[in-house]
Amino acid sequence: MKTILTGASILALGTTTAMAAGVERSVTSPALLFETGNYAELSFGSISPSVSGTQVVPLVVPAGGTSGDIANHFNQISLGVKMAVNDRVDVAVVLDQPIGASINYASPTYLFGILTGTQARIDSKALTAMLRYRLDGGFSVYGGLKLEEASGEVAFFNGYRMTTTKETDLGYLVGVAYEKPEIAMRVALTYLSDITHDFHGREELGGNTYNLPFETTVPQSVSLEFQSGIAEDTLVFGSVRWREWSNFDISPYVYINTPALSGGLPLVSYSKDSVTYTLGIGRKFTENWSAAMSYTHEGKRGGFSGNLGPTDGLDSLGVGVTYTKDNIKVSAGVNYSRLGNTSTRVASDLTHAFSDFRDNDAIGFGLKVGYAF
Image (tube, rainbow, N blue to C red; front, side, top):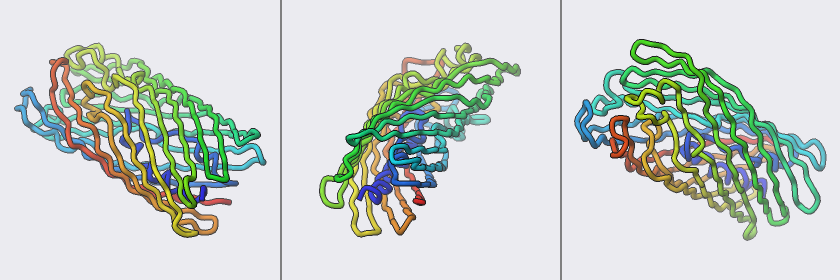
């Protein structure tokens, strides 16, 4: 039951992450370490968010203008390999894209869409290496290193542009787990450290170009993942995840020190941390087929959101199916998310709302192929 249901339960969660708190697009999880024997998996996700807002004050263009859909479609790919060294030691390596963003304002009836419009992008990739050691009594400990590369760029309608260098920096994770195989029970508690990237930003403003350093910290997190059989061929699973997004900001030197441009606020920042809850159920129907469903909730942080990330919280429903035959496991899933309403502001008025973003959503599809060898 554990082997078949785990694939479906992970898929049901997979596309939710891509629109969760901050710029997070994938979660660093120890789940691969708990696969039986030697195992490899390849995952692909396709996410289509729909995010639009309405300008509520007249600035250059009249109030009431709409932004159009500003959130671009994106894909996610990850690859993982796990090896059983001996009866007590397992190792795993995962390649993924942990953070990202892609925003494009192009509507001429909205301030950020006039002239050349406004675009922003964050790209990343990460390699995580993990080791697990089994203790007696069902307990195990694990840990590893995460090597993360990140870069970004932004271009505003008013002529400000910034492009960062690509920077690669190191973090780590540690955790402890308890398993009771006879009921497919597992509880895993994981701490992921923050990773600080020391960028050099090439900023262009008013015909001048500046090359100055700034740092951005991808924040630490603590997650609790669990699963347990509750009846024959039926599994309940879920997670609780805290991440310190209040410690994340993107503050290029010229931008943050030009009040008329930024109002003294970072390009991107979050006022509060996030807590994301997921609960799901999976069931094995035949020797080959199983399915799972999950619900995810992330609470609102409140206050204003940034114009480069105008959503706040989410509620999401995911379903997944898994087909297992011999050494191959294929999972497919779909996820629908309602994105929380929020308001944004601009440098000329930090007290009142400049725009409202409401009734936005995202849909994601995922495919995962696993092979035991």
